[in-house]
Length: 77
Image (tube, rainbow, N blue to C red; front, side):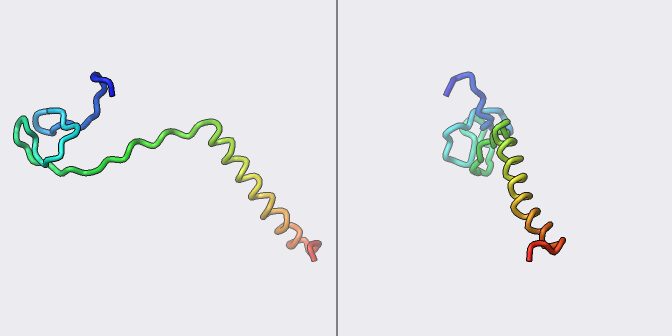
């Protein structure tokens, strides 16, 4: 990890970097806080994701819609 990268794990009172800390208080100012697990941010959907989503929706509509249309018209008997 680069030294200039901000991990955003900072003490709310004094701004001390709390990365890697396993105690529930800031070693700099003594402020107590809750330690909770953070999930990494979810990456945005790419053009490939959107393309696959559109294809799956289209295939689903064909697989469900066409037999339904035949059944409604009475030709699927």
